[in-house]
Amino acid sequence: MKIAPDKWRHFFVGIAMGATLQLTGWWLMPAHLYWATIIAFIMVIFISYGFELFSKFTGIGRYEFMDAVAAIIGGIIGMAVIWPLIIADR
Image (cartoon, rainbow, N blue to C red):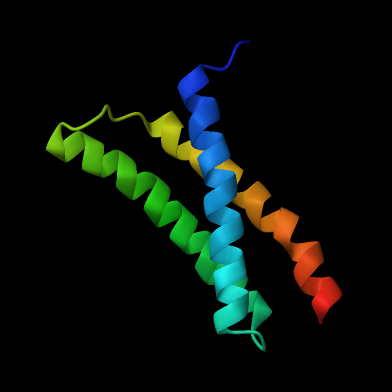
């Protein structure tokens, strides 16, 4: 099964988004790492799917649910990559 190139773009953008949101949550709420992670995860979902909904309703771009899924999977991986760095700093 070959994955379309645009799905890979969404995946890699999701990694950057997840890592950025995880770091931002840790910076804003260092004493509440689990809450920061939950909020970052919810934001990854909202941003990923919200971008697709924006494309659908404005006609700018093309709506594809699997693009949002690829971005969410990437976001989870981006968040997971940051976790060891955060734990090591604690």
